[in-house]
Amino acid sequence: MHLRKHDLLQMDAEWLKKLPAERLLDVSIRLLDDVQELQDRLNQNPANSSRPPTSQAPWEKPGAGEEEDEGMPAKRPPAKVPEAATEAMDPADSTEETVPRDVPPPLPPKASDRKAGKQPGSQGHGRTQQLTVTDTCEHRPACCAACGLALATDTPSQAYTAWDEVNIAPPVDGQIGLIFRVTRHQMLEVSCPCGHTTRALPWRAPADSLWDRVGLGEWRLVGPQLAGMIVFLALRMHLSRRRIRELLRELFGLLLSIGVIDETIREAGRASYPLEDALVTEVRQAAEWFVDETSWRERAQCLWLWALVTTHTVVFFIGYRTAEILQNALQDGFDGRLISDGYRVYRAWENRLRCWAHLMRKLRGLAESSDARVAEVGKEMEGLMKTWMAAIYAARIDPPLEGLRIRYAAAIERLRQQCEAHQADDHKVLGSVAREFLYEGKVILRPVNEPHLPLTNNAAEQALRHWVIARYLSHGTRSEEGSRAFALLASVIETCRRREACAWRYLGTVIEAARKGLELPALLAIPVAA
Image (cartoon, rainbow, N blue to C red; front, side, top):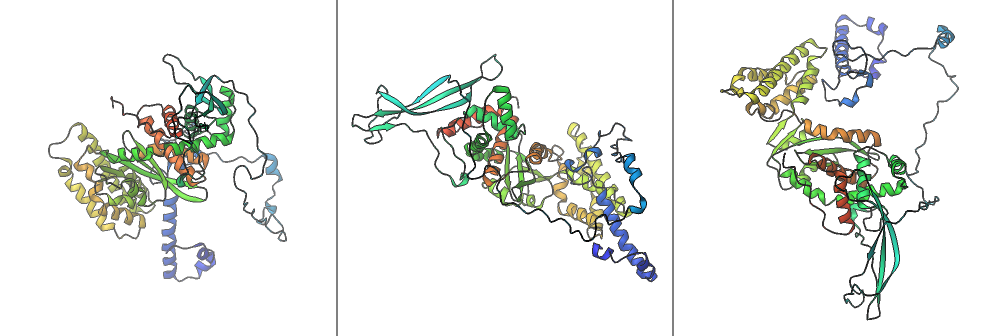
């Protein structure tokens, strides 16, 4: 058991002097164990542990300093104290008490019950920009709402209401840039011979419990193609709602409120929701897919962002870090290969591969341990893995006749012996790694038998990297609808990128169909060259 702060506060030099020799030796051994473990923790970095690259300070990353010694990053220079401040400092005055005893410490700020965004009852702002209408679109009722008689197209009609829609025109071959159009949609009312006057109504999606506060319909200021571009700027370009508003105003002279921009992004998420089943179906049909997860915050709740990645399809989910996420995604089963890290949830799939990069970082951490015995074992295991990795890469070019498993049978047996010898080791990290190799030896060493198989799940980590940056900038999402919209839109954008298609143009066609209640366009085809 490790010594805690409560225990250390009771230890000092006088207490150690009073201990008998045997007791002093026991205490010294315990302190040595704690110091070695703390030193190993202090030495952890993304190269020898599972810590993400973003955990490194900027001055610790390679290339941060102008001068580096043998590939090591330059250390951060110590902060300089102004000379005037140095002269004013008196060693006799540098006591621990810098505040009088009778002054109570400041109370922590109280948590506010105020919700984010516009408050109820606050003054609103109407639209002031006058848009020049370039096109007109009339909406006529098809039949009488009372008797059901079809209304002829030449029947006299008149507009009873209208709305303006700002949209981006379709691209023209040989022409670059964007062309904005303002279309006035006029809703007409037509009189039937029965005497009843029927009015055309804009289509509006019925209420959906999954999208309780997200509306979907035709009556929108932001056109579908412009909505697709706004979604692309928000998710792919990492622009906040305010910066999107600034960009539209500065570059195109279009004034949109932050509320309209946020509403557009949420609506796009609801419009894309039916595509989730199509994306998951394509993932199930793939020969192999990579999976990884990273933390994600939804208001005060700690969730996880999951990535299911194939060559041409990516699906993101936001939820808890449980097997339920994968079970819901793969309800009909999956016959392909699953490439993952060592998280226990993935062990339910027999046709699986382990990421060697994660294992190599763990072995590197053991090799750099302050415990000489542990470091020796770690170096030997790391050397074996490096030898097999080099042999696998060479076998992909020139396969050996006898096979790698036979060639390195003695080395594989040596690794097994080391793991069996240290599976119950007192050093918890070494024991954990040894048990991991024993429990999943067949999965880990499968590429030795089949050198063509991938050695890492880097494809999933690379797919998550961009959205990890988005998490740092936005601090996650604020609602369940926001999380669902983010995952869906990120899936569509990443899939379009892998298929070499324009993501925001495709999102525009999806939003346009969804606003009219029509069937959504199919997923973009996989490039033939691929």
